[in-house]
Image (cartoon, rainbow, N blue to C red; front, top):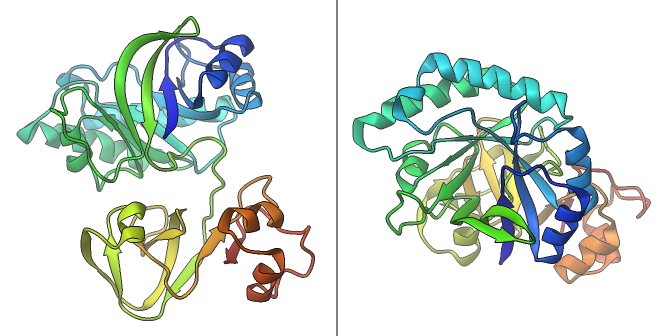
Amino acid sequence: MTLGFDCATKLTEKMAKDLKGAGFRYAARYLGDSWKSFDKKEAEIIQRTGIKLISIFQKSANKLSYFTEKQGIVDGKDAEKWAKAVGQPEGTAIYFAVDCDVAGKQMQLIQAYFSAIKKQLSSYKVGIYGSYAVMYALRDYADYFWQTYAWSRGEIAPFIHMYQHENNIIIEGVNIDRNRIMQEPGYWGTEVVKMSKYTVRQETDAFLTAADAKSGQNKRGTVKPGTYTIFNTSQGMINVTTVAGKPGSWINPQEEMIHIVSSGETLTKIAKTYGTTISAIQAKNPQIKNINLIYTGQVIKI
């Protein structure tokens, strides 16, 4: 199980190293200019220690009256401004919080707020933090989903990227909330593949999560033959969509498995990950003439 945490504490290098030593691999920190926000220096410290950084933007969001279309416009603009100010890579996620219990028709207010955010946030993907009910009600309004156990009444949505399961604990002297990483959550190191395509040659089963696609369980429809944009990859599965930047359906690429090269990866590392060889990968990818010349975002057949 991959562990993450979120906190309002400004992290020093020692804190980050100690938390890495305690087993944490992801840190979610706040954008902005408040007492709990991080700056460029802290971002560098976190990443230098090997922890993957995730951005949160939250001014209030702990009462229903906060969520209006007007506030969504303001927050979307402000989040983009602060993300660029600290050097956040474009195409990565910014999570916006719904930090209260919401149900029924109240969800329409939350939807209006996030609809406005999505229109304003041109350089980044939208993440949502909230309860189980919020996850389902906002599935068409975001790219990434971070569920809290609070107000979730024991339910966990199967498609989420992170799950916050414990609040306000002290680890290595830092007050944190614990999170489980369920699938790649849009962290700063994510390499964005804007135009990678995948051709579905015959009607294929569609699934809600990469794990479902891999196991062949919980089918939710089919993907018809055609050429699709790749939104994401995980566990050898791919998420294909007809709308670039918006998640679609997970499928199991039975004809061929693909891998999208991340920053710092080598063919040796990729071959080891999939239990194959460099020569076997080259045989399926004749465009790779020099094994030392692969690039971030490149789609490789496995």
